[in-house]
Amino acid sequence: MASSDLDPQGLATRVEELLEGITADGGPRVGHAAEELVRVLMRFYGTGLEQMVSIVRAGAGETIVHRMAADPLVAALLALHDLHPVPVEQRLGHALDAARRRLGSHGTGLRLAGLDAAGQVHVEISGGGCGTDTMKDVVASAIEELAPEVAGVVFDAVPAGPALLQIGLRPPEGVRS
Image (cartoon, rainbow, N blue to C red; front, side):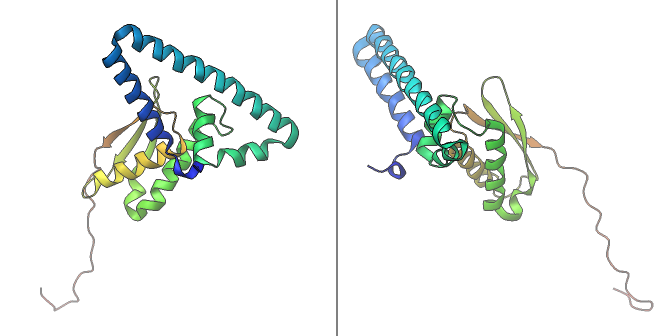
């Protein structure tokens, strides 16, 4: 199976489902043992991945690490173990830029408000109106793709500013509308 066939978020969801099923079938004691097994395996693979990144950096430099991080599955693994070469804030900015490009003129009202202590990204949406759910889906998808380690996306609506005054041309003298 190629890495392009794997969805990191889907795999994480499947692990959670399996752990919940083990707990439901085997009880809390078995569930805790299964969770501990996952933690130990994560630590094992994370330590090995960290060593691999160090070897690549020493032998080939940062460029190769960045090329590895361009693959969504590898990027998710690197992010999961705090090894991603691009800081999360920068990747969030790239995700919002990608969402803006996908949304065209509808994406102009998006602003990254920050990352909170719980690991949730706050995105401000101004303008709202028609298509807000689509905007949220596009933004959440872009963030999930480029920063899979974040806990979630919170959308904060920004109240609309004052109505714009429409200024038109005055009809020529002698013409009445």
